[in-house]
Image (cartoon, rainbow, N blue to C red):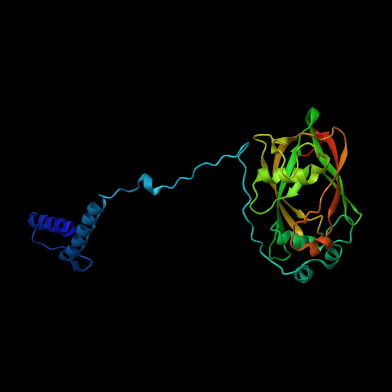
Length: 298
């Protein structure tokens, strides 16, 4: 009702205004009298503007704020559950899908060439959500990786020099401790799991077991770095890979001062498809050594 009352007042004001001269100019062939509908529309628009202006434009209740959730030692990302672009019912179906998409000689070397893995490994990675495989030509394998630069005495850094695989072959590494991240796993949990799985055998008796004290691993605040690397996979020749690296520096108690070797339990020992895990190439031993920080690439 206020809208129409305001419009009525506006039109009345127009009607009471001084009468213009009696000559009627013609614009584009139309009498100026035809502008009255435009005046009426303008009046309606003005009334609508004034009637709507009584509402607040934006209040604080329109804003949504999210509380901070600080972690214990640093702000770190959480790995969201990855939905692989492709899913396969069995290693055989994965193999059949890959064959026409990869160079035949490269694919034939999987699990045969020393230091490589086979199609059972890739199928387990996809099934466990550790890897996604893009439906492209060629396919691209994407992996989220946690890298832990363990700092020791004299600022030395622990690196894995090489690995001994279940097929008896040796794979050179020359890099800090690295592990594929699990779905919905934050970085802190991934760091603890990586240290436990790859270094736990040398730390038995130090309280660092499946229910041990995580304070044995201390991450250096502000050391988190993220880096993306794209290169051909060493484990799967011919398959391009995108590695999203989440790196932190850490101090770990209970490690030897010199070179040492650790043994890793079965990587997919809790996997429901244990039969496939038995066909995969697994890491049996890790060989570690301390090097100067300057010898590592930034």
